[in-house]
Image 1 (cartoon, rainbow, N blue to C red):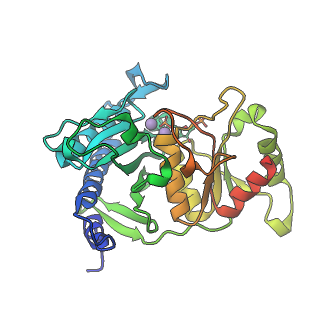
Image 2 (image 1 turned 90 degrees about the vertical axis):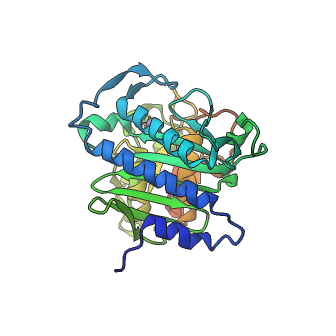
Image 3 (image 1 turned 135 degrees about the horizontal axis):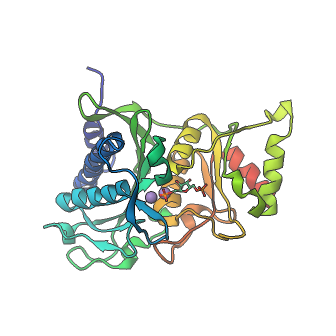
Length: 331
Ligand code: AHG
Ligand code: MN
Ligand code: MN
């Protein structure tokens, strides 16, 4: 048999970290379990009356769909059971959540998650995702976790990744030694290594941006968008526009095929829309680990020092040459 399951892969990789005690491995396993449960719920979303508004509004002022809540609660449940994580910050909660499992207080890690990314696509059967990132806590294990434990810059990340619920469910993650992708085989209920060592193309033809906001973009982005559409054989233009509206899905396509994903500042939202802790940092980490690049337009995303957990930043990420070209226009 030539398959490698996520569980087997995690154990094999533990040997890359000679002093590892297996805690991160167990934590990654717990994320895998949560991912399978959410995948199951996503797959039956159309059947089980769990579509539609949940009747509440999240801290960003957006309607909350039931799957957002299910995803959030599934992660809390899996991490409390596992006991490796002392606190979680989630797009769905105003404040950091100290975990209350029997062993959580001693957990050495904290986690940030966007439990359901692309929620506007749920009702229409379009790919959605989950995004996660893992940091080592700063406070002493055994003590009450503090906000400083989660408010860490991306350059302190221990691991990050995402799950995309697409034509298949895939889990993609990195612990800082490259990027690996696993596809869920529903017949055996396991994530199986399908994309070892993902390296993103240095160049690409796809640009992903919500051009509906074009009237509000900074001049540099407007100029870039004009340039990508100009005809020029030598530089492969015009490019191709692809925008799903689920960051995970847009990012994932560009990661594999080459491309640039842009959520720029707009007149209405000067810091863009995407959340630093829940969306931009973990995706920037994956982009860089795959050989790509991720910037706010002025700063490497992984070097931004967060000041609050729901902070937003502009994002330009993907194939290195494409990101550099956007930056060139933004100068
Ligand atoms: P979420 O569903 O977690 O709120 O995230 C939605 C995000 C992201 O996935 C996507 O790229 C972006 O919002 C789309 O925003 P626009 O509709 O403004 O383009
Ligand atoms: Mn999101
Ligand atoms: Mn979300």
